[in-house]
Amino acid sequence: EPMSDRPEAVAHHRILLSNCLAQAQALANGKTASNPNDVYPGKRPSNLLLLPKLDAFYLGALLALYEHRTASLGALWNINSFDQPGVEYGKVLAKPIEKALASHQNNIQANADIDAVTAARINFLNSK
Image 1 (tube, rainbow, N blue to C red):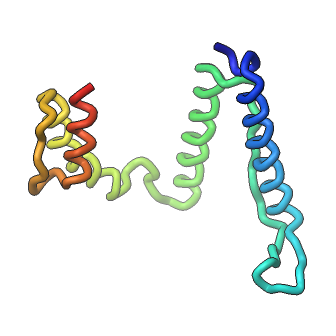
Image 2 (cartoon, rainbow, N blue to C red):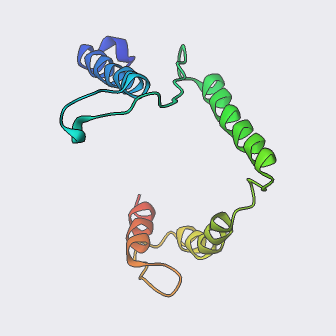
């Protein structure tokens, strides 16, 4: 069912969009106040990308944009953006998790490779 057929969804979307635009305005313009906790400096850069619709084409374009940005900044900063230690560590952690998911068992226990929270998530996913 399209969102436009549900008035409450349209209203919620309008509220979310209003807050998005308000945050961009606050970052740009800031706010002065007598209370230092209520001061926002402004002149903060931000980007807002508005898409005509969310489909495979525009989502792919958005992903390509961020991928290009990551690669370009990595080149400027002389780092390999796609070879990060955290990513490598994640790959090591993923191997026993993938085995547990492939087992289709929903009684996985925490162990040296899988913590209790991850085991519970695997059990939930394997029970579906």
